[in-house]
Each structure stands twice: as C-alpha cells, then as structure tokens.
Length: 68
Image 1 (tube, rainbow, N blue to C red):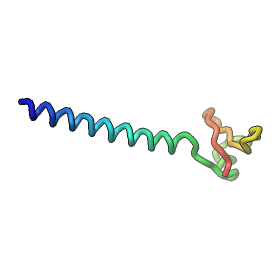
Image 2 (image 1 turned 135 degrees about the vertical axis):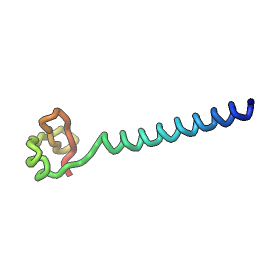
Image 3 (image 1 turned 90 degrees about the vertical axis):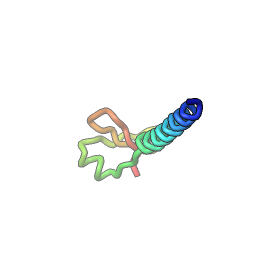
Image 4 (image 1 turned 60 degrees about the vertical axis):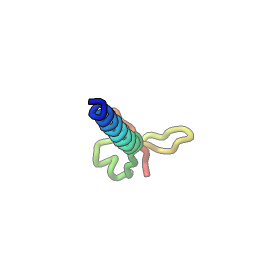
C-alpha cells in the first residue's frame, strides 16, 4: 500500500510540473506577440507611439501588441 501512495504522489508531482511548464511557455508566447503594420491595419487596429518603447498596435479588443 505504501508503494502505491509513493507512485501516486510521484505521478501527481510530475503531472503538475508538466502542466506548469506548459503554462509558462504558453503565457510567454501570449504575453508579447508581435504584429506588422499591415496586419494591424487589416485587423482594425490603430498604430500608437509609446515613449521609449516604440510603436504598438492597439486592437479593437483592447489588447496592445508590439509592431515588428
């Protein structure tokens, strides 16, 4: 019975580690996607100038993406 508990805990820990690693990668990709000026205009966004950060695209859904 003790061996099953240890294996169960090991499996649970591995699953949580895998999920958190996947979440971190997904979040990193979602935090700062870049967009071109043409794609911004096609999506209905507006080019906004940010001091010390360059230009960005303000999309109609309220998100802002860096211009490449």
